[in-house]
Length: 202
Image (cartoon, rainbow, N blue to C red; front, side, top):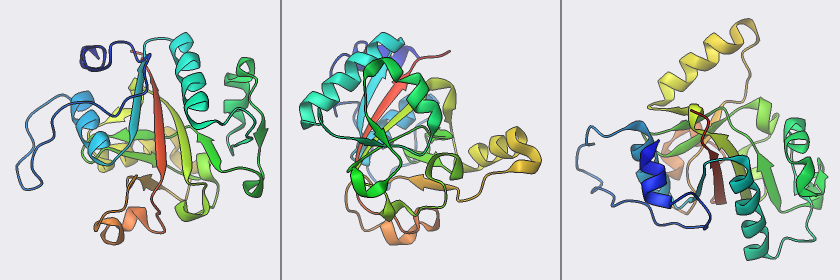
């Protein structure tokens, strides 16, 4: 994952700057999955923070909270593992959507082909994307990077076997685009303010 270190210098700064994107009608270069994801995630309007260890994740999260004046806000989450993982951060969590405008979540995969974040009922239960808060903070690891949605679905099928989660969808449109209505995997999607905390785990 050297490309992340080169592009972000360890993730101590919240930034939307990544790499140059190619034109909409130009073919993809044969570039590494991590770099491809970076390019398309930025194109989608996401804010990206690469972290080499959990201390950098903690620092980046503090910066996000400070940048948005979220110090006294509850974090809406449907994944209890996050409360355990971030217990030392002194965040206040709620599972009541009406009490928060910040959704804190994990994901299943990061899809390089279109820079999307694949989630399912493990993260969002049965909710549609437009039922989630407009601000999203996603915690993921580099081992969750895949090239395509089909690859992600194959891994999910192998991992869960007879207990495949439902409500599988992608978070892709972090700003309004004409494509929103054309992607069936983003049904019910709405524009979101998305921060991705990506932890190096290779």
